[in-house]
Length: 251
Image (cartoon, rainbow, N blue to C red):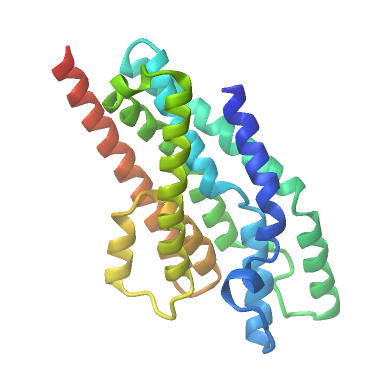
C-alpha cells in the first residue's frame, strides 16, 4: 500500500506542470478569441486539479489485484480494496491541489483584470464538483475491478516479482497509450453524439477520463462525467463477477 501511495503521489506531482498547460499543449496552441481564452483557462483549471487521475486509476487497479493475491478470500479483498482506493484518491487530489497553486494564481489574475470573463469561484462550480466526484469515485471502483482481475490471473501473480512487475509496467503503458489516444480524439472532437456516449460507456474508465475533463466546460460535460461513472461501475462489476466465477471453478 505504501508503494502504491508513493507512486500515485509521484505521478500526480510529475504530471501537474503538463496539466497546467493542457489546452495549449494538447488542444490548440494559439488561443486568441475570448471563447478560446475562456476554454483555455477553464480546461487548465480542471486538468491541473485532477492531475494523475488517469494513471492513478491504473495503480488502484493493480493494488486491487495485489490484494486479491495476498488477502485470504475474495470478500475480504473487496472490503480492503474500497478504503485502499479511497486513500489513493485522497493522496492524488492532495498532491494535485498543492501542485496547482500557479493555475489558481493565474485564474485569480483573470477574474481580477477581466470581470465576468470567468466564474468568480470555480470551486463552487457544479461542473468542477461533478468531474472531481466522478474522478475520485473511479479510484475505489478501479481497486474493486483489480480484485476481480487479480482473481482471474492468480496463477500469473505467483510468478517471480520481477516478472510480474515487468508485465504490469508493459501492459499498463501499452493500454494507457491506446486509452490516452482514444480519450484525446474524443476530447478534441467538435460534437458529442449518443453513439459516442454509448461507445465511451463500453471502455474502461481510464479512457473516459481525459474526454470527461475536457468537455466538462462544454454543453455535454455532465453527460461525459456520468458516462465515466457508468463505465467504472460496469467494468468493476464485470471483473468481480468474472473473478468470482473463476474462483468458484477453481475450488
